[in-house]
Image 1 (cartoon, rainbow, N blue to C red):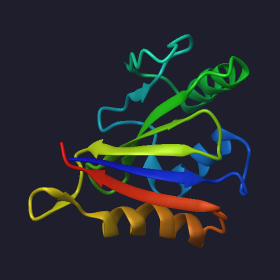
Image 2: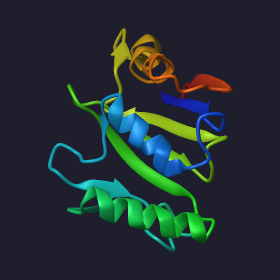
Image 3: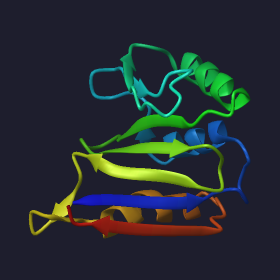
Image 4: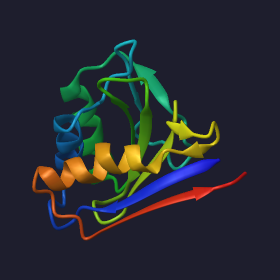
Length: 143
């Protein structure tokens, strides 16, 4: 199974950095359980050569700024603060943010994505912090 969530946060901000900050505010961490950041590096050029480094939050935001200047896709894995679940956030801009629900995906009946959990811990929390979403969509595909 593959699950995706697509968000349009452009009414909230045009800055991917602002979106990452609000995700951190609602409980999604930029550091994995080992304290490392998983991200797409500068110059990745759609190779999806994910890096996993011990870098600070400010270093990550510097990388994101440089990627934005170069019109490159931003990619950061986020990890839920009270669990093992994670998502891959990928975006060129805030009008189409793709969240790949793949890291320790919460499931029901051992197979299907627990979409209500992701709605509660992403969409509803964003709405509760006054983030105006122009649209959101959740999809699941069977392999």
